[in-house]
Image (cartoon, rainbow, N blue to C red; front, side):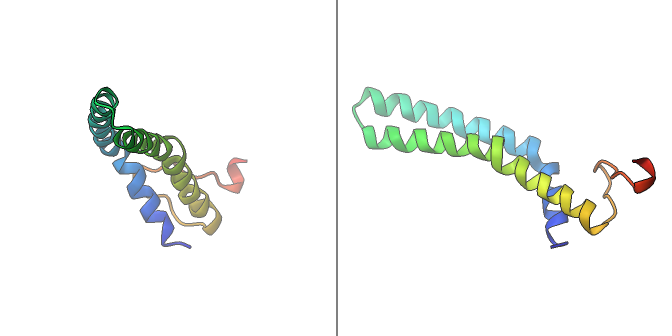
Length: 94
């Protein structure tokens, strides 16, 4: 499971850029949703809504959960913290 740790840390480091990308994507999807609704295309409107919800799910659930799993594994496996990652507590700190 140690292979998960650097991937979770990379995800954490890339979150600001990913959130910026999501903001642009969601703005475009909202434009699509508005146009599809106005022009009577419920399939396209539903597609846009689902993709907006997908982006929200990634930001609010999946990304934080992935980072948490990486931090837990780093703690559980005793892997050293990488630069920019919070230091983990030692038994002496408790």
